[in-house]
Length: 180
Image (tube, rainbow, N blue to C red; front, side, top):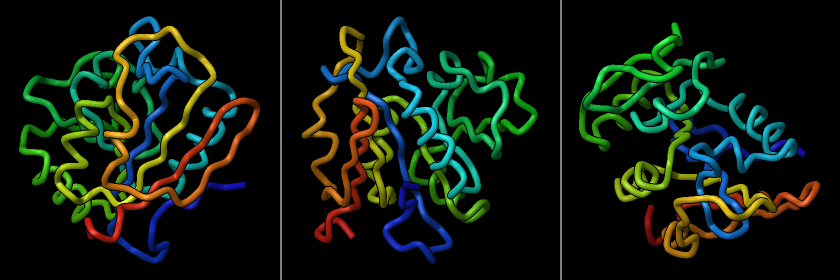
C-alpha cells in the first residue's frame, strides 16, 4: 500500500517530514539513521519520495548520511559549505537562511518538499507550522543513540494511519486542526 503523501493530495505546495526511529526512540545507530532502517522502511522511503519534488536536509544529515545521489533536488540548510557525500551530489545546493525562509523558498521553488533530517532539525521545522505531514517509521531495532520523546515530537499532529510490515511500524500524522 503506497503511503498518502499529503493532507490534501491536490495541494501543490506541501511540506512533509520523514523520520525513522528505533523501538527505544533512538534516531541513530552507530552514528547513522541507516542502522535503524529495515528493508520495509527502505521500500516505503523510496515510494514516499516519489510524491515530492525536492528534499530538504540539514548540514549534520548531509555530513553523516548517504546523500551522494538523490532522485530529486537536494537542499542542504547549513551555515557551512556542503560536506560528506552530499558534496558529491550534482543536485545538491546549500542554503544559509532561517528555517521558515528556507521552507517557504523551497515550496515556492519546488512545490512539494520532503524533509529528511534528524530530530533537532525536524523539531525546528515543525515549530514553523509549515510541516503538514509527518511520516514516522518505528523500527524493531533498539540500542542506538540520540533517543527522542515521540509524544513530544508528534504533539502538534494527529495520527492518520498506522501499518505494520515485517515488524516495522509506519505511522502517518497530519497537522492537528488547532495548528492549521
